[in-house]
Image 1 (spheres, rainbow, N blue to C red):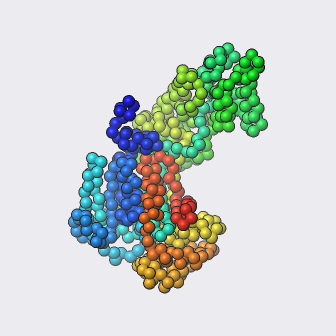
Image 2: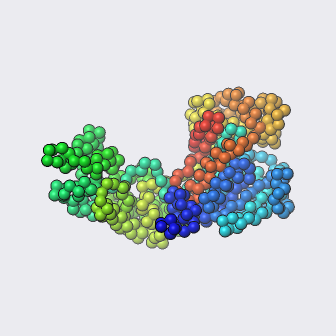
Image 3: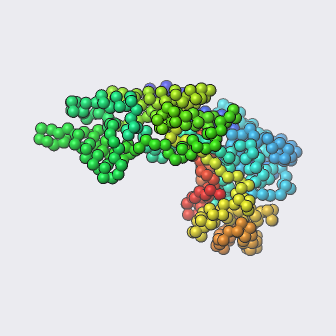
Length: 509
């Protein structure tokens, strides 16, 4: 019966709606994503964004039409370079994903413009194949200045790579793993105190006693010894039969099991405190993004209304209790959360509809700030420490990152990647080794790269195996959904996948 009452969209997207909710789905449906290069990796990424319901997408591809493309209708146009003639073209997008782009290249490439329209999911999608994108560094600069998130993706042989480039990405619903409950047992608010005092455990009958929630007011135990003593105190409260044997009361056993998780002190995390003390939270102007206005409002609540605490989250975990007692306790927390949200809303009345969500997730606010590609590539600002520390193991993922940078250097010098044709493999090994050494020397990196990796990358021949592209496509689409919905925390800022060992690593470069 419940399934019959669901809308068609709810039935279609039921499982993902459980992850990011109606509001997250709405963000997806309103998003416009630009994909640069429809390679194996690019199409895998796009497939994994179309399936959950992305609103619109544009494909930018400057490669020449080959025999594989003749089944598509197209229009030929002049080979103008979009970045030079219309850099603001990219400002319209929610997110730009660049696939198989070189770090830098020359401007002699040639391209056509193709336009193809397709109706999908009751909407019109325009796939526009346009102009050459010359390099990550050039496009990255345009998007960085326009505050448009840029996700760089690459499959090179048995290596997958992603780089997130965004000045500032704010997250309200970060969905942290193993988040502790916000029960305020150490600092109960007045309504909770009153509710707790309404329980007369000693005067309860057996049934009522065995269904009382485990929520009570006391001084929190601070160490293992105190927690064990507190568990024993709970055990002493279990009813005993006429023979003096403790009854089976699951609610008390549940309370004992939750001593370590439910008895967490009420405090503001260092991450949220850093946001409160940040410049963006202090300097509120008419141009300040809504996230920072609401964060400032929460800070005002903490300082003026919350007694140094965040707004009450308003949710409680499932627990053994009869329905009436559980609902009554749940309502105590919900009503307090609504009161706190109402207080916060006075600071941001223009954003009233968003306030409830921010208060509920105030403990989980996150900000991701990446470095630009220009900072990563510059000799003056390269993160040498991160690279050197990650090269302690000569076979870690960092060596794959250095090899990707080296094959790009090879491309800049030879206008092709090493080992593209079999006859080039042997002669390109020495050339690629020179590129590796010049990269390390230019950045002053006192590390070494094994010859095995140089040989291996020459044998790759810049191939894009579909198995690796498929894995990368799933990973990249997941990060794209995080960015679009502003839920969950994206990686910062470099991700490397080693398909040979089935391992991954992230670095801040």
